[in-house]
Length: 288
Ligand code: ATR
Image (cartoon, rainbow, N blue to C red; front, side):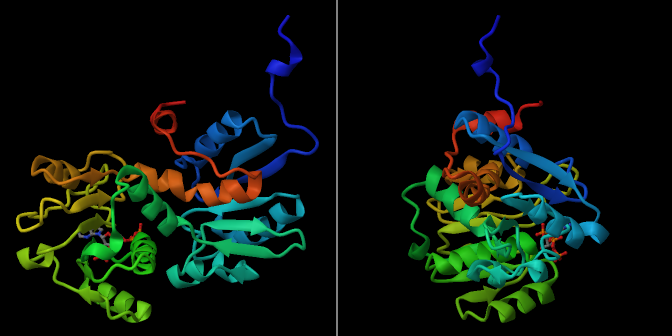
């Protein structure tokens, strides 16, 4: 008979967390956190929590009252979570959305946004020599993901951010809201001089994702040393990244951002800052 200790089950003192969303079936977070829980042998559980938007507020409070340590919040509830929180981190307030809620011992809801952290940590892990302050960044898009990238780049000391979006007004509104002269709105599609001297190019649009049109961009004029990254991770090798690699630029795919953004929540709820490894990437990408 197999000794009982080879089985891990929940106990009466398991720590509980999960991801709220509608739908939530596409979320990789349960496998990601589940992998770390198993790897570190933690008495905890991280579950998918499909919650209709109309039930969001009640569900969030109920999870707190059920003794959860915290939850991640995914689309479309990232903005809905903000007003429910008793306290917001500076970055969550500036990004304008919450993806990580921690239930404090006194019952207060602490909201954070770790997407920008995930973006930066992913680049740092894959390209440790990266110096965000060393040159202009070109950022494509103006949606929710873009906000996190902008806040993170500003905080890392980026000297100039050239922001381009199909709907120029959205980029202008975003630049006005961020109120930082380093953000300069440029034309979409990019003119060749928008790439001149850039040290980083980031796609935050949905272009290039499975089922979406490709991002059509002419990288001529981009220094060969510039790092090119995409927040799209399905497929891992987007047309943008393939084109950049072809001309010799270093590239970083978008999966790591998803993995790294999960670290602060896991750390708070389960007590360990977990590692992002190749084995984890393979595990998250593999079918169940
Ligand atoms: P998210 O919150 O995931 O960033 P979003 O707010 O829907 O999503 O933003 C999607 C981004 O992809 C936007 O910058 C959008 O450009 P618009 O603001 O002009 O809509 C961009 N995008 C989506 N489809 C596009 C397309 N076919 N061509 C150009 N940009 C596109």
